[in-house]
Length: 226
Image 1: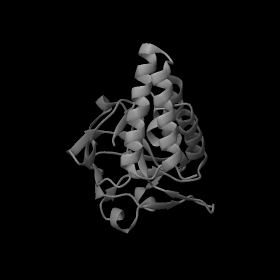
Image 2 (image 1 turned 90 degrees about the vertical axis):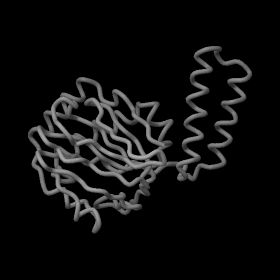
Image 3 (image 1 turned 180 degrees about the vertical axis):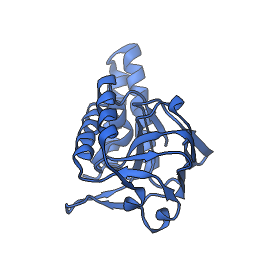
Image 4 (image 1 turned 60 degrees about the vertical axis):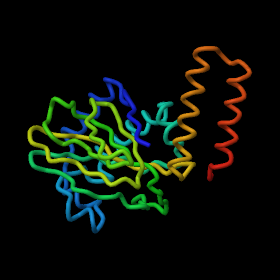
């Protein structure tokens, strides 16, 4: 299931993030790459634990906590502290699949990467190329969203970032461990939740809406691991 989530960041938050990105120090993106990914990865990242990375991460996590669409699609249990990358001319990230488990630095916590996320800071017109391409059952899906928007997709997906041909592509990326580990189960719950929301908007909280809401929560209770 691939979900685009609009307006994760407000205009003020986006300005704050861009200011932090502008003064951050950047290192080789290979520092967080696995053995396979390191061979095809060419970009830069803000060093984990730096003041700018910490401040940026706080903004992103606060935005996620209030976003109902993210909560419905991801059913988050744990979120890996957001990371931040930069692609400049001719930089790219070839085909790879994200590591199944991520260790949170300096802690004993691990995150199972059920979902991968990319939150865009650069506007599409600010750079050429740099599309995130995700392979799913329907073939390659090309993603290049407005600044402040985010895409959420299964961590099991083969994906890549095409070479940037002009400008600069700035983004945050991170992983989510979901309460519901199976992507097909999450997709069913998400579709059901969105249908309930639409039905409630049309008819209010009638008996059918309440019954469907009960079905949703009983399925979540059945599948969730807490």
